[in-house]
Amino acid sequence: MNIGLFDDAGWQRLLPLTWLRSACELRCGRDRLVDKVRAHVGRKLAGLWTRPELANLAAARLGLESPAPSDDWCLVNARVLVSADVQPPPAGVAWRTPEALLAVGVRAADRAGLDAGLFLDETRLEDWLRSYRTELPPRGLQLINHPWDLVHANAHELARQCREGGVRDGRIFAGVHLLHPGEIHVAGGAVVKPGAVLDAELGPIHVAEDAVIQPNAVLEGPCYIGPRSVVRPGAILRAGTSLGPVCRVGGEVAATIFQGYANKQHEGYVGHSYVAEWVNLGAATVTSDLKNTYGTIRVYVNGVGVESGRHFIGAIIGDHSKTGIGTLLPTGAVIGVASNVFTRGAVPKFVPSFAWLTDEGMTAYRVDKALDIARTVMARREQELSKPLARLLEYVAQAARAVESAGWS
Image (cartoon, rainbow, N blue to C red):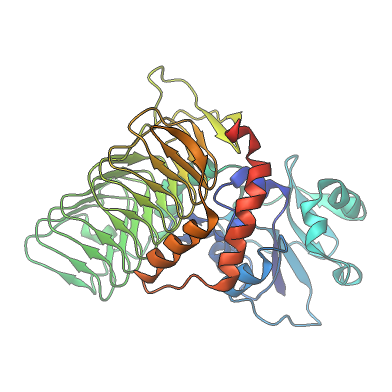
């Protein structure tokens, strides 16, 4: 069976994380949502229906296969977190909740008429589904509505996925302390240096290929350290933390997801947060993830307040954004794409994309300058700012002004 993914209108509730990627590329546990679809629904991922400005870039990153023309198709919502093996719905059946379509078995007669706009238009999609039999989805499918849903699902997903403990193929120096070593996986090429403590008493720890745990770092499970990532000396990574590939992390981090290629090299606490790619957090950047009233947190999604119902939310930080030394981020802060926060004063709960925030106030960040910096930063990690990605950033700079207009007022 061919498996396809579609972004629906809910992608805007996942901003700023989805400005540069499909929802299925977001991380939870030790991998991305798309990887879970491949593992539990079907490996032949042959299609992606998403916004036109993103389609080619995302398809290339996902490595789509050529579809088998005679096979049936199952289309899965890109916002679905799949945590158990499921048999795809048969043709003519749609798995729905009151919130959204989660998956559908597409009838052969309908396949040719599919387009990305169908899934992005809620009214049109509702009309299209009238001829399909509706069923409730099976267990093991969770719809991700907001970025903090991923953060709060992360510890459970790590505990579910990181079941390859007892493997120690990497180099572990004398003086390393492994608590519950049967729950600890150190992959080939990884290095764990003297004085490091890997404490898997409350959950597994997975250190991926070529990652480095430097001296006196402490990791509490469940925890995942991605390929070529580095945990700095003396760092404390608390339970529920995932580092994607090529991250550099120091200080204290708790229950936080780093998408990949991000830096938090120095002291400072980051908790219950989601940090996108190519982010740099300056020394002593601190997030607040709990209100002093112990109440639920209001998060400003695209500049508009949303009651999360959660007691722990730190910061949601978009790609290519940066904070200065000593930045203090309020509870439930949202920082857009390619924003710069360099103020010792109060940081707003929402900083729009391509904003330049200093003690003098907030102004628009020049797009050409943002691209120059992105090009330099990516080259330091042997990556290239491709022309398609540069065009997408230019598009986002314009589109975000409308979507995030409440954040500029």
